[in-house]
Image 1 (cartoon, helix red, strand yellow):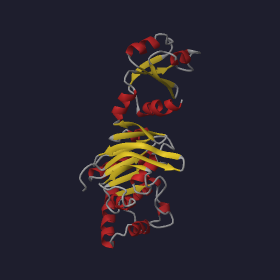
Image 2 (cartoon, rainbow, N blue to C red):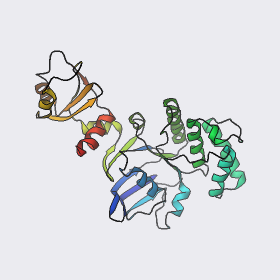
Image 3 (tube, one colour):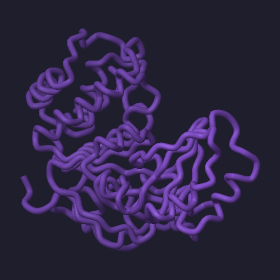
Image 4 (spheres, rainbow, N blue to C red):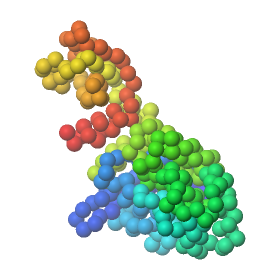
Amino acid sequence: MTPGPALEVKGLSIKFGDFTAVDDVSFRVEKGEIFGFLGANGAGKTTTIRMLCGLLIPSSGSASVGGLDFSDGGKGIKGKVGYMSQKFTLYNDLTVGENLDFAAGLRKLEPAYALRRRAELFELIAFDSPLSTMVSSLPGGVKQELSLAAAMLHDPEIVFLDEPTAGVSPASRARFWALIRKVTALGKTVIVTTHYMDEAEQCGRIALMRTGRLIALGSPDELKASAFPGPMAELDFNGPAPEGFLEGLEKTQGLLELSPQGMRWHAAFRDKAAMDAALSSLPATAARALIKPSLEDVFIRLVEGIER
């Protein structure tokens, strides 16, 4: 395995005409890490991944991927990485065996090596259906697991997963994340994008992106502590909030964020004194409880809050 970090990115940018899709992004990923990208659609997550897979050449900046750079147009990098795209990567009108044979052919793998790797990966994902099974007949979660096997057929050091659990059941999502942990236990590095906050919680570190820029980087706990240095209260009015109360609360000194959470509200403050002063006029019928911020709260504050 190549010495040094799995990935090291410095000032990476890409433009399409006058549009800057990724703007001056820098980060480092260690070997064996589960590193997540979190952001709204259009934030630049997929474009960043496609550059790091050697599928797009950056306009400026540099990146080391498995110890290689873009000096050869990204050809060497492609041998170091496996990529599972947002869209389903297997062909529904082919069998399982035909799909994996096709993937092996694209990678120009020796037949004996491809057969050995296929057996290893089938054991990893616990797949025991016949090779003659049509992919179209498989459940969505199993298809995603086979897509991962196809992406890892050439035994890459780094595996990129672009929203790998989109559209599958919660049980299949949990199974796939157990599989991700198995992959990292084998020494692989996994880079994953997701819209699910509970999945992002399972990443060692998260890069939060907005409009092509990296706006926050750290572990889930570090991002929460940075976005919310003071206390957070959950407010339950047992119905609609009294007229004018929320409007007044929004103007309070020391309020960091006020956001709806279903029928309740999350209110974050600079410190306890600010919270106590702001909530001193809370109606007697309302309930308040101190809570810990979630990644969803972080996302609302750092992404949606800026847009508001």
